[in-house]
Length: 397
Length: 75
View (cartoon, each protein chain N blue to C red):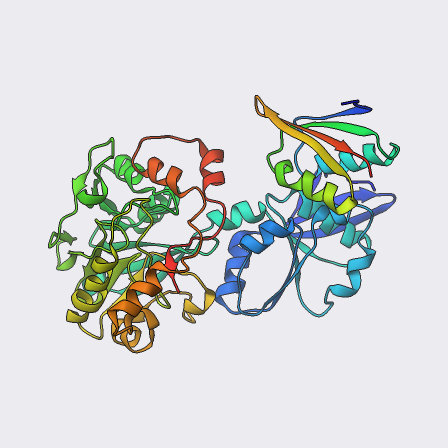
């Protein structure tokens, strides 16, 4: 089998030489795939990673179909899988970093099938962020949700009159700083709702680069090695000259310091306490403390005091069903109280049992990620990527 | 362990380490042992998975100073 690096590249098509033929394969970016997910389009994905990796996580879309064949089983040729690939829809070949997907895409092309490969592979999928406007706020203000489709993380930016606040930023800081620059706003406040264990926070770095304050709940920050502004219950921060108000509400149970934010009395940023289709899990700190009681108090008492119409914006989503038609992950609190099973376990014993039994496995490398977020270790980019492989496992379903 | 052949795949990115490993294995006889050196982190899971699917045995694997070593016996 002849596979050579191609010297020619043009318009997203990669040209290679095989005998006397010039074959073409299409290159798709993560942004392009994200559009397919959000717009609910059909796609056939040939995932050529090994079976364990595929079982762990994959590119999720409502109308996506999948075939997982590790690339090393295709080294002798792709004839056997040709009947398994559809001819009436787009076919995307995906691997971990793009190398083997390019090889397989070229082999399929030689066999007469025009397919695409994912530029940068699952690595680029994991780091892709799609900014989506949640709502307009008063006086020209805006609220944006940054959807990290590959990992289910959700970050937020509140913009008003030349100023911005960021909540639960992921580690791709340029996405946020560039976005603020394009909007012509100055980042003044950067918050983390809690000390994250499933992903590396970009909050501290964004704050440092922008001269902004970085807020962490003090109860989650007992071991951090850097300076921060304590995020305390009832703290009020104003964005812009008008009344876009960010109000902190102490809501423990996922971590001991977990804090929610009420933005302009219309939006409730719940961090990892409450999700659209599930609730947060209380055991991610590796400590033996019992936070189940705190979780119940937050969900069943503190949140019940809030208006039904307040829109919940969590820090994660687990399944594509939690996403609205416009790509946002958001739901009225009243609707969640009606439909979310985690909010409807009247029996406290049943609640306790549900959140402590049968918890899904801990997020990959969560111990190390917490250390990074505490400032105790400083891994390089590749090491950070390794730590974040796989989906988030923040919820109890 | 009697190493029949050594494949230096250091510095090569996926899929080349396995492409070359397969090529080297194809030239060997049953029972012979191939030593593979690679720096590609993906090989950590992929080489054992490939070996298993081909019926070969990974006799030993180790990491020394960022280099992955695999000792694979042909089926």
